[in-house]
Amino acid sequence: MNIIDNLTKHNLKLPELTTPGGSYVSVNTRENIAYVAIQFPIKNDTYFYQGRLGNELTTKDGYKAMELCALNVLAQIHAKVGFENIIGLNHIDAYYQPSRNWEDSPMVVNGASDLFVNILEEKGVHSRAIFGVEKLPRNFSVGLTCTFTIKKKKPLNRYP
Image 1 (cartoon, helix red, strand yellow):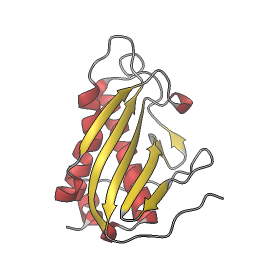
Image 2 (tube, helix red, strand yellow; image 1 turned 90 degrees about the vertical axis):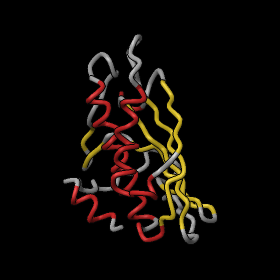
Image 3 (cartoon, helix red, strand yellow; image 1 turned 180 degrees about the vertical axis):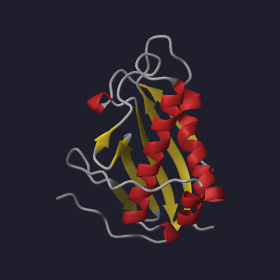
Image 4 (cartoon, one colour; image 1 turned 135 degrees about the vertical axis):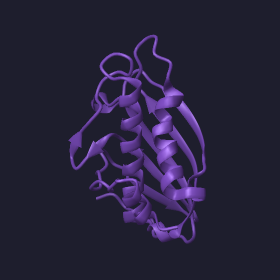
């Protein structure tokens, strides 16, 4: 399996790295676990998919937003850990900002789940939790955190 080839095969490209919005690091490693801080639908410093699912955004928009969050996760892992060090994706926590009666969160989160399985293949199989929240930063419709098992310990990242 070559992750870069799989991205190309699916007409996907890793976005530029996003930077943390506070006093934390985007990827923190402890032993052989890499924790990826929340990633939002940002591509090359441009915000996408802002608003509430079921109001300003459709379920299909939400799927695409989660896909972009997952690409940002992969960009962070590629830069901070290296694809060659991935043993597997363990778990994802997906956050979404819904309208009052909107209930299609599993379909939206499949945007991330499908991408991980398509790109990482067997290493992308994972468990997940989905959380509807009242508000996400900058009115993003979705956000995504992940944990990976990695082959070797990398030095701890330090924030500036």
